[in-house]
Length: 381
Image (cartoon, rainbow, N blue to C red; front, side, top):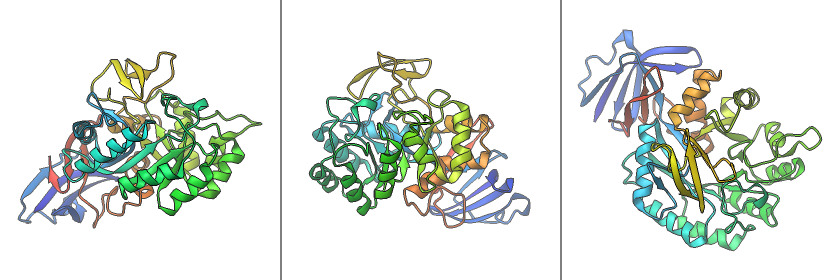
């Protein structure tokens, strides 16, 4: 299978460039300036004229719970497939199936359903599983169900890993809980990304967690103490540690634009990741939803519990990309935050960039960042 994509605009450190791209099977094998017409005589199976629109590497959402009225903790393959479909429709070609705090039984069922879907996704590819909980601090629970929050248990985690195989790519924990440092050490040896959130950790406790192997912050600033000049807390510890990357929910609600710019200024595009943290309302709209053991009201796109607590989001990855640029993040950096950096954090070597030798998982966007075409595994859709 040979494909030529013509007349597309790509973004790189030098700015915007018009190029043609040659794909063989699932791999990018050539990139040349459009005016050279190097691939004009290629015999191809597929051709796509990008009409000068923006082509980006498929984005990667490392933190998403649901979409299209489906929650991936539902215990069905359909729920995971619906998220896969919606992810691709909104600029994402890979994602982590993300849990919420639950019983062990419910989590194992979600893992089983994920294993059944992998390799048969109708849309974006499953790159693994992100466990958000259950080892989180009830004081910073957010929308996590307090009935299932518990202290770290190495035996329970061993059971989870045995069931999941190598699918667990990221685990979010509260490091101040009893036994959590031992858990972090254990997970680090398994090459799993250890993230921190839903945590009341002090500055000192966070630094200790980083020393043990934590390297990532889930939805930075949310579900953790705010910065105080005499109690700098988890966020400050993360911001001054160059080895720690952060997630950002850029929806205009969870983070003020000034905070988005500050995160970018401190961490740069290589240390900052765009996520949706979306619940099943993504792609559906306002209404009442059951999520994480709570009733959630979505009004004007904002999801909240009865007490006003923010409960995930409804933003999509292409919307987060657009908002990042509107908030002042350079386009090339915003693309890196949506695609390149999450791929790097997950240890993925062949996705997240438009470059020779990389997988042909690509998204064509119009000037409003709406998805025009997708290329997944080299196939134009």
